[in-house]
Length: 81
Image (cartoon, rainbow, N blue to C red):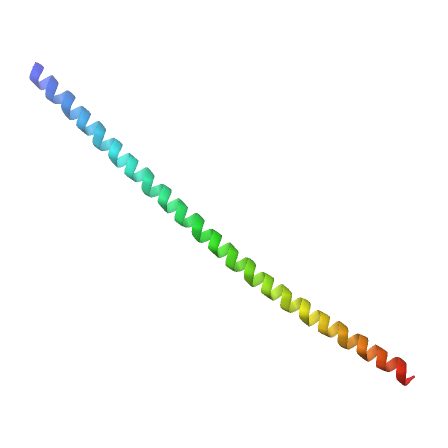
């Protein structure tokens, strides 16, 4: 009976060690996955921000060109009167 108990305790310790190893591996893998998602999200947000900035600059440029044209037309209409 003592040898059975000793074997059982050994098995229990081995099972605990194996379970801890699996848990540690799972936690490590999950942390890696979360980090990859975070990195990907940062890249996506950065790309979107760059595109938005480009589009905003283009819109500002178009508006400035239109304003300049309107001012020129207004100036020309004052000279003709």
